[in-house]
Image 1 (cartoon, rainbow, N blue to C red):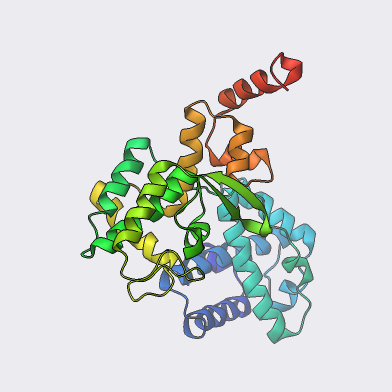
Image 2 (image 1 turned 180 degrees about the vertical axis):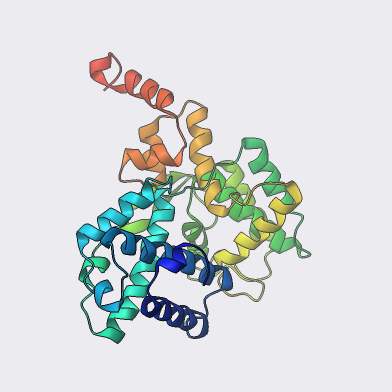
Length: 315
């Protein structure tokens, strides 16, 4: 353990930290990069406490850290242009270390463990441009040596992009759902049901897959089959998309879930109503749909001004 901050840490705290890092490496199987990140975060934390308290922080002193001390550390860390995600990671490392240390030293770590992580927006996959989404489907069709597997993958991706289904919803379809009707009743998250129109292109893609699929269409069996006939796993679709995006030079954000985002964004760009898109996606909150479609504030206000009765729009 080296560096100026490491020199501020008491020998007892340094030894405890090293034992914890060894524990993470040996028993938890943590990667070396993770160990290095843990070490840097905790050395900085322990060094701060030494300076904050004005005295070397032995194990006894570390057991008496208060919520006020934790807030001071977070405020100082955030002032160094550390973003909320990085702050949350640092706090997670501190909590893990303290949980381990408290068990061995017999103290109550409530002040540390009850410290709340900063809130930050979830990262959403970026939608693909229309030509990129089409190129992805075209490329996926060329990935497999088996014609029926290629047709299957095209059908799945067409449902994600053309109907806004989650990958779990597409792979949850049964033989009884085919041939696909003009509208599908989908049971989404939390058991919430929604009605989704099915584009002719999606119906045609599923029909093309069924014509060449070597496994019979059984009512209660999965509609989309794996190579050996079992249920198709989401990771298989993720992998075929990963191979295609490598060929196309698309970013790592070009995932199955990104196609669902693309469905919503492309509808909105074509003049679709935000409320209607919310229903199609099965979102409880309009704010979630706004984030999903990557719509900017100007576009949202335009929808609002045209739709809200006080703005002179419709009801």
